[in-house]
Each structure stands twice: as structure tokens, then as C-alpha cells.
Length: 117
Image: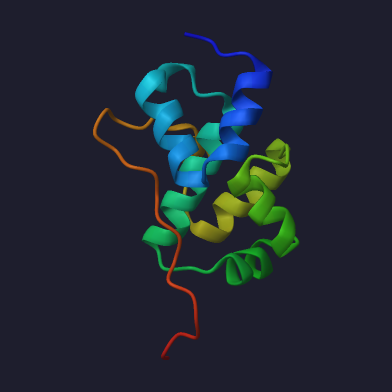
């Protein structure tokens, strides 16, 4: 089922990041667009490795706000940029295009605050 751009915009503005991804995933996981897949998997991998957006951005040589935009689907990454980010995360670029399974939930953000080192 493909939704109109108006419907998507209104759903995104009326609910949070997790609710939007959950709705999109439950209704049509096979139809998640490229940006949605990159956003889902980028956050999943980054949070799974315990890396902040700031640290990942510095390691990949990109702006932190741009990286946040990738996770919110407001930026359109190039293959070169995905290559940089994948290298900083030590994963293959193909990891950004993995389709979530039926029981997968949206990745949660990292806990805010300073980390103990």
C-alpha cells in the first residue's frame, strides 16, 4: 500500500520518529524507501555499537547535523558519504539497506549525557 506524500507528511508531523518508523514498518516493510532503510539501519548500527552521532560524524568526517538529518530522513546521502559512514562503523555499505524483520522495533536513541570512560 503506497501512501500519498501529504499523508506521510501529516503522519510524520503528528507522531514521533519511532511511531513513524513503526507505522511504516508494520504497514509496508518491503516498501520502505531508501532513505527510510538508511535511517533505520544507520541508527540501529550506531546505537548497537554505542557510538554517539557526534563521535560517528567526527570519525566519518561529516557534520553531526547532517548525520542527524540522515537518521531523520531529511538528508539525501551520496554513495561516497555512505562509504565514509560505513567505514567509520566498520560495516559494509549493504548493511544500510537491510530490510527489517516483521518483529523488529525502531532503534532507540542512545541515552543522553556524558559517558563514563
